Amino acid sequence: MRVPFTKMHGLGNDFIVVRADGLEVPTDALIRGLADRRTGIGFDQLLWLDRPRSPSADIRYRVFNADGGEAEQCGNGARCIAKLLSNSGEFGDRPLTLEHATGTTEARIQADGSVALAMGIPDFRPENVPFVTDSEQASYSVEVGDDLVELRVVSIGNPHAVIEVDDVSVAPVAELGAELERHAQFPNRANIGFMQVVDSGHIRLRVFERGVGETRACGTGACAAAVIGHHIGKLTDDVTVEMPGGNLTVRWQGNDTSVWLIGEAVTVFEGAVEI
Image 1 (cartoon, rainbow, N blue to C red):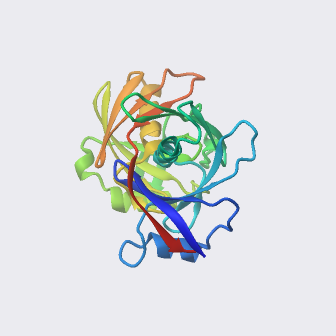
Image 2: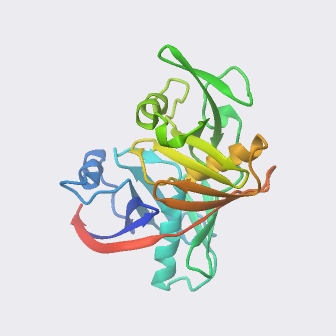
Image 3: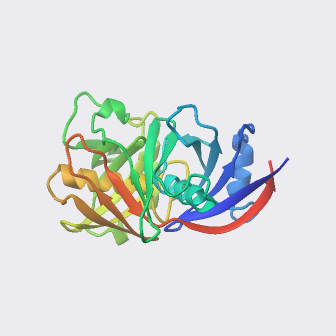
């Protein structure tokens, strides 16, 4: 079946968006083929849009990584979905409610065309990340080979670990990220962020995404790093998160408030593919 798609990106974190409308989800093998940047379309994630189950939601989306595995949430992807729906005109200019595997997300189009998402309340409880440990702590020492790596964990609707480094440009993202993504203490695997604090309102970040590898940007990874930095007293409520693909803004007032993710979402091209 020939299916239309839209290719989009948020700071170089790229997607194909499909309005599925009841179509059967592609197999893992087909997703991997479509994700291939030489013989397929090429993308970090496939965003599969369908009719919502919740009466309060405008649309439901599922997120599939380039390796075919399904993810719970995707901040940059959700921003692209909101921009696509806004551009279509079908929902007017009101805020949108996007349904996903772990709940719903509110999306607002800003005056400058950027998209703001309410990503929910961060969850630091290790069992909800999930992260296997005997007790909740401020940070954890994880064995990787002969080394101990200190990290902090949080759920932004999907699992994240954040490692603070002195210089993100020389951090061992590919090697250590791959080791930790599939570490036994992360039973659902995890996204691994490497964070350099520049000042209280600015961090540099690289993220090894679960099922993809290092990406140009990661929306939930930006949220995870910013809220962890805030949680330990190093960052303010508003943080510029500088990543290889560009900057995102993360806003979090702490405690039981939702974290907001703000940034651009760009349409690259439209096409159709056999699924």
